[in-house]
Length: 412
Image (cartoon, rainbow, N blue to C red; front, side):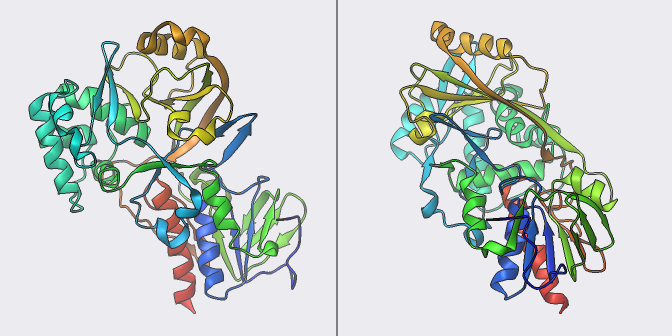
């Protein structure tokens, strides 16, 4: 990959893309496939934006607890899933209530588990039947008539307060990064539908393999790393290293707050998360499903034993564990371990803290009533894309990048 390399022909590429996250790479690959000249500039030393993976000795750390939902319809346009060597989470979840673990199994994906699922005490029978009804509806891409908060929508669907608090709250607040279930029901049900229709997975070499694979489809001289932008005036782009670009079309594909600052557009607010990685001499459970804090006690909303899901995440003798705290940036290591001690007992005394990621702009805010798609062209031949212009997800980032590229292609 090129670093600080000027374009071959001039300092005015046909299309300049600021940001080599998923949205920027999607736009670049789509334009390249249509024979357009593209240059992508990226402030960091690697591609991916928020979807990146660090190597820490024998461990892989995704920057934030991230999963890939294979049912995202946009994926097949941009990613070779087979080449990612996906490792899958067990369908369903492990609920922790009153410090007791119970398994909620999805019988549609594991038919032989229908009787254990029916006997599980994790949810009441009426809530299980409503969950099955919801699953059937979402398999047909159903969505609510009006976009209200997720909590109100679940109440209207007939779920008990116990089911909402012990199952949907830790699951969906962990996905939508909401303190409660005040996020968009339309978005929440869309994500649930993707979970029901497909699988949750991890690339064997980390989530960062997704943008790496996408970047490898671009010519080497189409990408400049370590090239932060100083300012943008119209379509004139000034880099901190002194370079200036005057492209025919400009796409700003950064996170929402950065795009707002560079372009002077409306402020895009973000949700934050903190996640902690731990190693353990042995996994505290054999489960490869996501663990949900069904009692709401403690800062951890959900956690996973990543080495059970993908052994490549921990190539030594120790297990790798991740705990996620959406929106909770003040939580301490001791608070997390105290909660995990209640879940798993004395074995937690041997856990070793490895890394904490505090991500201020983990996901754009998505309130009830907000449209799934927002305008991308902010002035003549100047565009903005990212999951803050579509749904806050990998799906939304990829779609927005393609939409920006298609808009450019349709203008000529």
